[in-house]
Length: 155
Image (cartoon, helix red, strand yellow):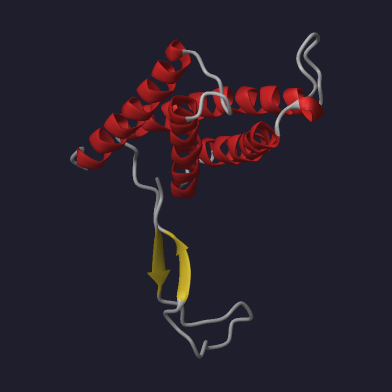
């Protein structure tokens, strides 16, 4: 994960002395990634692929692609709202995870914990099997464990 640093610039883009020397922000020199950082990045990318599939499945529900399924329009308004929420947030989470950005992890945690919470508290709005809830919870725990390990690793 790369950081941004201030760079002391004495010239602007045209070669003239800059009035705001030292206010330019650029990416810091590439620091070699350590073992847990690499594992975390791979975990985030694999999870992103699963979340893309989850988002496609949600959009397929909206577009009534699944044969024999109840039409989206006949669902109760609360269930329609939940489906549309996850259709949007799952893709946002997948993109953020794939980019390994901090906001991606936050949006993904919002999506994953929302799904688990809704499935447990209001199963009529988001029916999920117990095994699916366990998988979501396990992925969240693994993400926190890998983030913790990557942060604690000596650089």
